[in-house]
Amino acid sequence: MSRSEPHSLRMIELGVNIDHVATLREARKGLNPDVIAAAKVCEAAGAQQITVHLRADRRHIQDHDVEELHQVLQARLNLEMGVTPEIIDIAHRLKPHTVCLVPENRQEVTTEGGLDVAGQRTALFDVTAGMHAHGIHVSMFIDPDPHQVEASAAVGADYVEFHTGAYANAKGQAALAHELDRLHQCALLVGETPMRCNAGHGLTVRNLWPVALLPGLNEVNIGHDIIARAIFIGLDRAVKEIQDVLFEAAKFRAGA
Ligand code: PXP
Image (cartoon, rainbow, N blue to C red; front, top):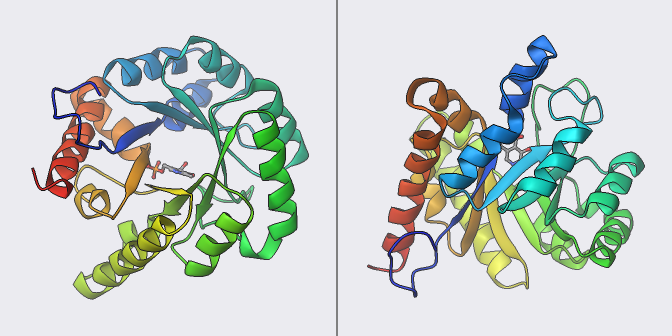
């Protein structure tokens, strides 16, 4: 715990997704901005985790980024990955703290929906067991759907990360309330399993608060908003303002 809060206060951890720093670098195929330096700023600002997505098309994060991050970071490394033999081998070799299994489609701008764990139980049971055998925790990036929560527990996942894109894109109060209710119900379901509950996608300093109050929420992974705000206020402040929201939410949840 980096803040002087009571020890009973359970903080919601922050993973900063730095793919967008690599996107900017790859726009010129050069060295700037430095992805490793950006990760270190996030870490120094208190992020407990750095998240990167090593995509099959290597459009942003490159293999050498993952290797170097793994060597230099004190924070946990969370490798988002499509479930392909190539990336599974890389994960087994590098042994990040966590892998977050995501659906991956070459045409998409970003991860569009949750992984269908229920539709591929046997394969994902084997992938999860293989990661565990290499000492790697496994998170399933799923839509807030009770079937997917149940299937994630059944295949042995350690975490689910709820895809919050539908919440982030909801238009109007009714749609927003509906999406929050789905997240809330599924967070309660996760609480009945050995898994822990994370959330990510489309979260911003403005829409984070209701998500941070989800029951038992363990961690959020945020990329685009932090990197976008960093242009105006700096990366350090962009990370810290998210952490302020998480800190206030942890206090609120604890009734402090
Ligand atoms: N979590 C997962 C599993 C993701 O795929 C992404 C997007 O790469 C994020 C979190 C972060 O989403 P955003 O960049 O919208 O904050």
